[in-house]
Length: 196
Figure 1 (cartoon, rainbow, N blue to C red):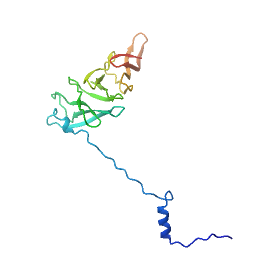
Figure 2: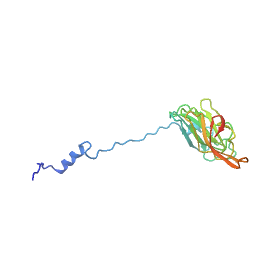
Figure 3: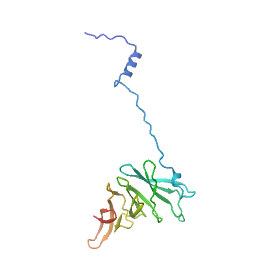
Figure 4: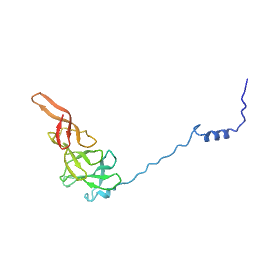
């Protein structure tokens, strides 16, 4: 029987050789650490709140990553408070802070969305309507202006990448002619009327 010649090697040397042979055994893993960059501090957006405590919530980012929309709200808000929250847009690098808060006191704002380039911001407000803002001009309007007002829980909703169309569910209510409820998915050109 043939036996190959194997020199006697101390086990510690063999173990060391195995450790330094690439791909042969365990290689130490590279460690990556996350870094955080503070692009905005609450003190940058707190002048309107007096002594109230504020919180950041409801974030949305443009598809290209250039802008971030967010809401800053008081943790406790009273009926006597003239404003309970503010709507802002900021460039992703922390520059160009814009206040897009509507002029009248809204009871709620939720479900922020931004189009691809961050030029349009959408939100669901007052528990019943879709709004959109042209970010650069700071002008906000109803996104769908005909026949979709009311408390029918139209969220979730979606927008196309350009922000030209909005898609949503809607309950038109009882139709006397067909004797059925008219519920469905709808689309609308922003600033226009619904279509099925």
